[in-house]
Length: 300
Image 1: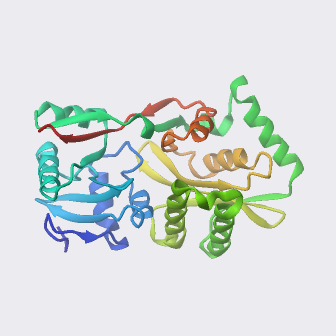
Image 2 (image 1 turned 45 degrees about the vertical axis):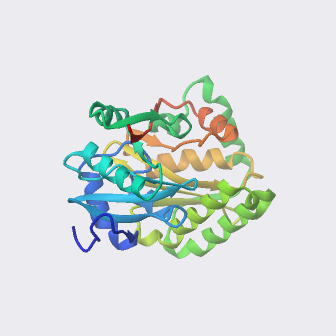
C-alpha cells in the first residue's frame, strides 16, 4: 500500500498520508468523530500516531491518555482477525492495549468471533444534532440561546466571514490568547487540545476542512473549523470564542452551521470526555442522539 512499512513496522503519520486515509474512510462512511483525516492529523502529535500496512489494511497506532491503542483497521477484509493480530502483537510488547472507536455494530461483529471482548466508552460518545435545529433554534427550549444571540447582534459591531488563509496568523494569535487566559494552560486536557488546534491552523490549507471567524470591533474574537464526516454528517473539530462577549459562542455556533454546514442533515460535535461543564454545554443544545463508541480487547 503505497510506501507504507509493513506491520509491525510503523511510520509517523504525515500530511502526505491524507489521500490514502481519506480513500479508506470513504469506503466505509465513518460515524465516530475520530475517524476523519483532519481530526486524526490534528491530534497526531499529541497521540504519537503511526501508520502501517497490515495485509492491505491501514493500521493506525496511537497513544491515548498514556495507553497504547489502535483505531479500527481501515479496509480490512476481516476486521476482527486484523484487530486480533494487532492486539496480539501489542501483548508481545508487554502491553494490554485495545482498539478504540468502534460502532456498536462493529463491536458486536468483533465479539461474535469469540476472540475479542467489547466494552462501551460512555464518556466518549459523540453528540449528534440536527443541523436545522442548530440553525433555527426552534421552540421554547432554545429561548436562552436565541436571547444570547439577539443580545450579541444588537450590542456589538461584528462581521462573520469564511476563514481565509491570509487571516490564519490572527486566528493563531487569538487561540494563543484564549489558551493562556484564566489558567487554561495549567489543565492537561486543554494543553493537548491546544496543540491539536494549532496543528489544524498551521496546516489549514492542506486539510479537508472549512472554517469561519467572527470579528468584533475589527478583531478576531471567535472561530470555528469543521469537516465532512460522512455523506450526511459534518463535524465541528474546533470552536473558540471570547467568553467575555455575551452571546458570541452561541452566535459562532449558529452562524457557522447556517453558512458552512447547512448542506448536511447532521452535525457531530464530538464528545465531552467526562467533563461535567462540557457535558452541560453540549446537552444545552439538545442533541438528537448520541453516537456510542466501543473498544475491544483480547478475550484471553
